[in-house]
Image (cartoon, rainbow, N blue to C red; front, side):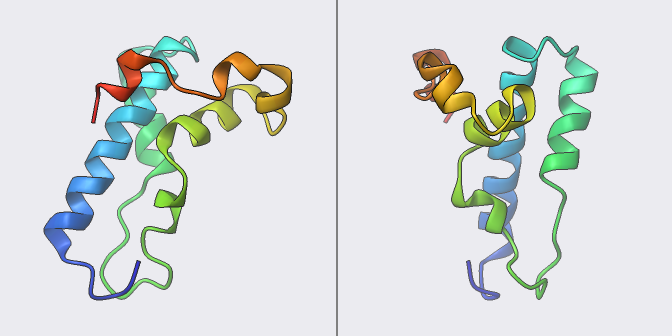
Length: 93
């Protein structure tokens, strides 16, 4: 994403990814609501305009980042059933 990314669009994307990440952490990571929200904020911190590579974390969706956190780097091989998010997750968009 370039530095000219409109702030409202960035914030919308940031909040959406935080919501999805927290959902995965609750449903697959066994986290409480507050703990899942804290994990989402840590994974998706706000980056002010002008920050190099602002929003680079968005190159993969929250599902992927949460699965990496929960199951590690081999989750796709060790848990192939988790490669594709369930419909309930996809409906969050």
